Length: 405
Image (cartoon, rainbow, N blue to C red; front, top):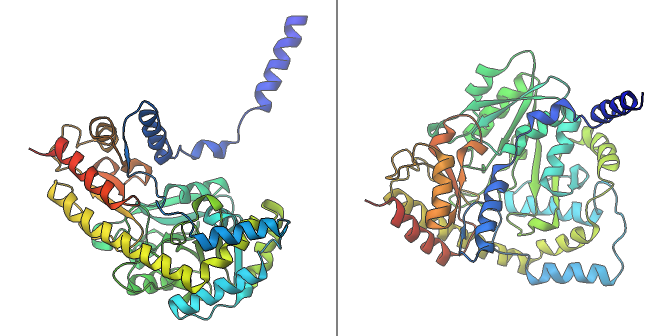
């Protein structure tokens, strides 16, 4: 009798701990797995050059750090409005005018706990069970997992280098069906570093609008544009939702602060969701972020942007010399998405094996393409140049020793 009771309790406990089915659709984030493997080598005393994680080697400038400390000393650490500090929403709106020549109503700005929280809010608001959401392949892996987390079905559409690895109006027309609800795109993109041309962006948005769908445009790397002035999707469609962040251009990754610009009619919806899911973003980070828009801070950020461009202009030609194929020059972010199929290395047919070989043989951490989609991932790797110029020079020298003739 006691054994029977115990078995019943064990079965009940197993059922209680059974995870929701949607969790099985969310894969591990392999970038973090590579970071963990690199960390193990570092702890053993090996010098590893990190070209895997998308994190600037720069941190918040002095005036931003000082603003955070001032907020703490002043006791400005309690909850803010769920939509964020009014002063910060106004500062973000003014930034669009300065950076893009766009007039954005501060009431449309929703400050979030990082861009990831912004994307979660957007998917919570717009994605229903079974809804399909189109995105390009390759793309940032978490985007499809955000959709899956709310019961949606991400649909990755293979996109070529000729299309700048971006979702086009033709892709929308060819893949839209009765279950399709909208699209998620990023410009500039992770992992490719490519920006949608103005014509691509306008055409894609028009195709979605004609079908009554939503468009979420991730613009977190917009400040890191190198070959032309950045163009926001807000310039072309009042109904679009844009996502941005203080992590990349503003060098505040661990501060976990971002924002959305949403149609005015949806502000109450996002406010209700933010109140329930996050209460509010970090108050200290918000006060610090106000200093990001000072003239002296923007001067620092622009110097850093030019430094990232210098790194790109060094790295891409060097990779091509080593046999990596980079068919389209990345014009934003700090990534190179390279085809390794012609690289002179025994593991060049398998990006996961190649990335591990590069880590173990050259002590350079890069990321295999299978994190970013299903279109030829074994042929591609992503390299981040968000590390010091001198370290990139050393990384190239190390790669040359294992992939040269």
